[in-house]
Length: 328
Ligand code: BGC
Image (cartoon, rainbow, N blue to C red; front, side, top):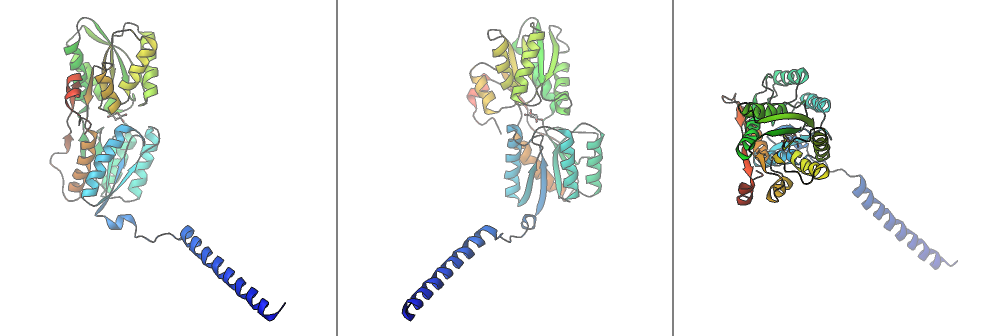
């Protein structure tokens, strides 16, 4: 090999080496470099946590939406946490973890039982304000409640039945979870409202586990066991949708008066198509939004009015046809 050839080969090798080295450095940087941003909470005035009943539930996502809007406007770092599927034990563990993480405020659905009351005590004792949202636990030291007056909401469900039916009515209730305080309060409200109307009575109650499929199954079982049922009441947001399906499966031609809960788009569609007669509207976006604003106030002062009820009302077909913005 001549000296010239050797030089050329040598130069090519160096070029090849340098090129691959540069490429390696570039992609290595892209793959392994982690942007050294300051921790998120340093950019915000406060760090709040919102504990929902379950992550992908449409109703809780609306609460989150409202909370995020208020958080953005006020430079709050908002953490949304929840069990994948409704599970009180898991929720309580999340609650405990957030207390240990020393967040500035915890907004959480109220959970039945001593453990929840103890955790609220622990948080408040450590200077972390707690707001119950959607479901209250009055016996706890929570600093405030933001959400529906659930007893009153149950009364409204009763009122729709009283006003829109005649003769003997046999009610089958599909409820989210038997151990959820808000579901119990709604059923209590319903009972109280119909108490002075002996033509209306509750026949049986079944759980949906706050899923659409659970509500379908519950409806099927209710009607199979009690064919006399001619009113169905759903007390959580996916119950109405599931009840319609369950009724179609077991008694498609039966005339049943159906009252649902909440204003998820599918429920409103079913009202428009006469499959659901009425629904009790809650305002989850407003709930989420308000809860963050109240939590900001709680950072500086004690609230005089710590029971903040958001609006609740009956929506029938005419109301649904008239308004499009019902989901706030
Ligand atoms: C209730 C929530 C529940 C949700 C289930 C709503 O009506 O207020 O507590 O988590 O339904 O989808």
